[in-house]
Length: 460
Image (cartoon, rainbow, N blue to C red; front, side, top):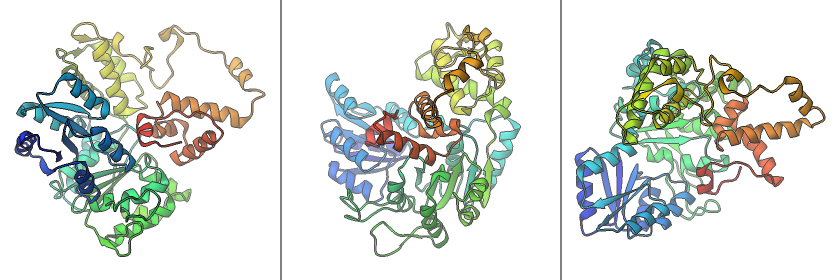
């Protein structure tokens, strides 16, 4: 955990930093927002910032968003009234921490930001085999490719590898290649010099340099543009990178972990992924099985999430009865662990009493969960299925492009604007989806966006 302290509050935040260091955090401190931004641009990354509530939080949040720096902010104040705390949250702070610091409260905040909920939970023999291989290769510096469906826990496995490696005390930096527009990804990875392109207001150290000595996770690497893949290949082979607009190579020492929900061998055959890069990445491949093939994990993870969300919502610990577990075991879990987590969270909130029954295992809209890979039957949800003839009649006379557009936009809306999930459901690459959405946006059609898109001011 890397903690950045902004401001002093007469030493009170300093006291908080001492507590954080006693809990294993690496702490750096600056006096103001300008110094904080300079520190972050220079590659001194942070996992969380604690800052004086009297400093302009909104200004920092906006600057971080414009420069695509992901940093949770915890506002801190002494004898601060409720209004100031609420204003800090509205300005973009994740939490408000009263000072003088409470050691247990700071520990809880650090634990939450450290993503303790990403703990690797498993019991199924299929997953034990994967974890056993992961433990064997973790101490090495070999590149690892983690493959699996969306929601199976690829990022959690990557974090597990780093924490069990010889680089565990060094930076662990993640980049989602699917979430960053193609024209910005090169700068995000390799950094840039001031003035190298419009908007490059200062030198920015990229993720490669930020991860120097540690581990760099390239999430959903299959979505990286093939031209940028050539530069990535050189960085891995030569252990040097070139900043955008830079004049000399910069040496780096990092371990690469890459994830993909696609078969990269197929991507090579389709000429959307470089074969030589694939050979460099998959020194070892960890294939995470889908949750439907891990029945023992369904039960173990369900109990884990029940405990987590009972505590998170201030409720007594709930149990799962046989009817609920039976429904959980036969669900196809197309969204894998992520979908199971949301289902259990919902069940904790909806169940009456201290026992989760089958009635609390529901879809987000309150309908019954699907059974054995089939859509919910009319007997389960009380809604009569639509006649196939009526569906076909509704399609006749329409242009293929219009039907495709409606399907894409409706799927994206169903996924709350999440491009990766929508692309998986549609069976297309996220690049193809982005190209389609750009066409729709240029035509003046409203496209569903995620909260992150809105914060960063991104278009389709």
